[in-house]
Image (cartoon, rainbow, N blue to C red; front, top):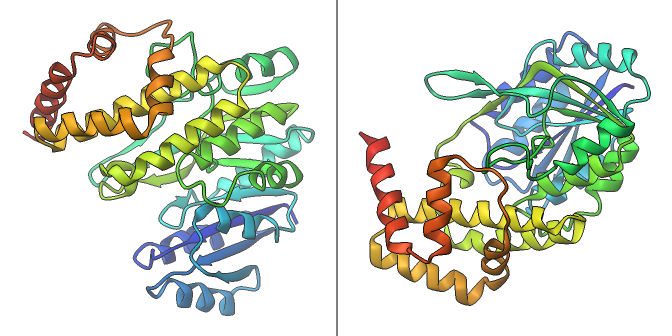
Length: 336
C-alpha cells in the first residue's frame, strides 16, 4: 500500500463529507483512509462509520476528546502505507493529488519528504500560496540551507515563517520518519504542533522534494481559533515557544518566533479591545508569560520592511500606546 491518509475529526459535520469524498474519489486508489473521531459531540462520528461501511479502504478510530496531536498519533500508529499524509477534516484534496505524489515518488524513490503547494480558499476567492523555496530536489549541502532557514529565513524580510511551511498537511512523509517525529510531540500540545513536527522532519530527513503542484485546498474559516483573539491561547503559544527553543540550535530562531507571535497577539488584541484593556493585556503577558516576553525582547532581526521597522521600534522603546492606536486604526481601515 502506498499511502495512509489520516484525518483527525472533531465536530466538523458540515464539512466532513466533502473532505472524505475528495479522498475516495482520487484518481490514484492505492491508499487507506484512517478517520480518527476525537470525541465529536455532533454527527461526525456517525458520518465516519457510514463511509466505512461503504468503502473497505476506510478505517474509523473512535477516541475520547484529547486533541489533534493525540488523534494524529492514533492514526499514524495504525498506518500501513509507505507514506503518510494528513488532512484536516474541513479541507479537501485536489482530485489527482495522490497521482501526482506517486509520480514524484517514482522519480525520487529515496526521498523521505515530499512537499506540495496549497490553495487558500476564501469565501470569495482562491489563492495559490507562493513557495518559500524553489521547487526541486534538496539533499546534502542544499538540504543544510533549508535547515538553516527553518522557522525564520534571515535572507527575507521579517516577519516570515521560514523556508518550509509549518503545516504538516500538503506533505507526503515516509511512515517511519513521520511516526518518530509525531510521537515525540506531547499530546497536550495544541498550538504549534505542526511547526514542531515539521522542524523535526526537516532536521532528520536526508532529502526532500518540493513541488509547485497545489494539491491541497485549505479553507479559510474566519471564526476558527487561528483567527480569533483568545487570552486562553497564551499558555499554549508559550509552550510551543519553549519546545521550539529546545529543538533548534540557533536560539535566535526561537526568539524571533516568540517576537512574531507576541506581536500577532498584541495586534489581535489591539484591534478588538479598548486602550485600557490593551494595557492590561501587556501587563498580563509581562507577569504571567515572562518567557515569551523575554524571548521576544532578545530577538535579532536582520531584514525588515520600513513599516515593520517602525513596528519593532515602537515595541522596543515601550511605546505601547502608539502600537495600540496603530492596530486599532488598521482594524478600522480593513473593516471599511
